Length: 466
Image (tube, rainbow, N blue to C red; front, top):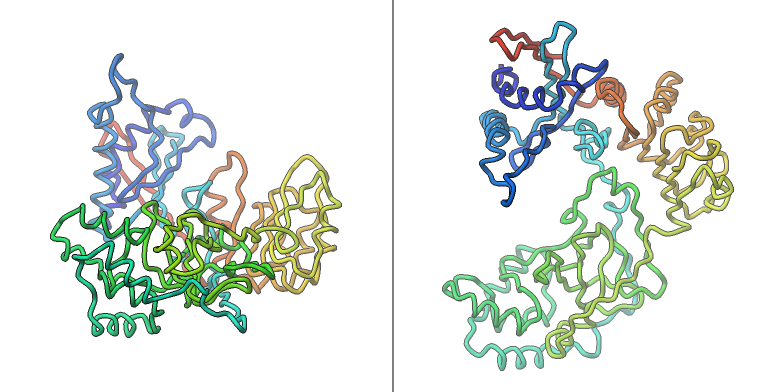
């Protein structure tokens, strides 16, 4: 048996949990849950009080670090990146540890350390991540685009840099599978932005960044900022929508095969040349891909020449996604919102609020583009009305609503992913069982649970897998 399934591996951690929360563990149904990863962990142990007059020190939490390190060592030995766990107390006073392996068909949860989105179809991604850019005839470079001016300006600012050869540029094009725009070629003919060329001179790197207006990637660091480069968990991504306004400069995409990322603003936001602009944009415009968003990009300059020569550093974002009529939020205290939301363009419907009467789904039945429904527990008048939503690819419901669908054999077979919305304090094990029922319908790998029992005051342990 793997050492991660050895009670002794967990003993120091279990003692911390028991000593910190003995009263809660002794209560009927009392338990604690958490996760241990190689770089982070949740440990329900009390924070030690620092010595008056000084900040909390590493030594003050050494017991916690040591306990976690023991589990992390077992993970490394098993080639695993993380594990979830639950601790409870048996009637005979023994400590019961549940070691949870969510498996490859479950995303990590936010509210629960066990269950995020259930991946019912292997490799499936939400619709926005499948969306390719539209073609807008007549999209041309901006009048400001001037590769010769760009190259002269950079040579004046950076007279001593090493530029890329034509062979190196051709190799980059072959690697990316695209022809680089003339402006980008002009930039790299002046500097190829290799750290080795600066011989560890940070000032030289800073001069290049200042001259160009960003932290420039080396030529071999260019990449295509397509949808795959911007991953997002289903439980968030399924609620997003791709929208491009009629006059938008930048298409509201997750990513594009025409976005060539060439730099960073120093804060994690990527700069790219956009070869697939929106109806109001220019081919080769400079866009900013915000690392805090999963869809869309902001316009920074009409051309690379404009950005460099005129020191453009402002952004302008076309923020038209996640708005009606494509995305709608309905609450139970405003049931009329459901009728207003029932537009042919509707893709994402979120139902929340527990103050009013549950709402019916009949107004949105049969809508051609509705692909995502999230309904907080208790908000649906009749969960079986979901059968009228024939194009759903993602569905998030409370445990009771899922039970209604399962008992009726009415879980939509169009789903690619699903989520169980757990509100408040609920015991995790019934949620795990429910998740496994859903996974089994698609023949997906199930969540496994190894149960270990032991007396923390003796060496007696036992275990088994469920």
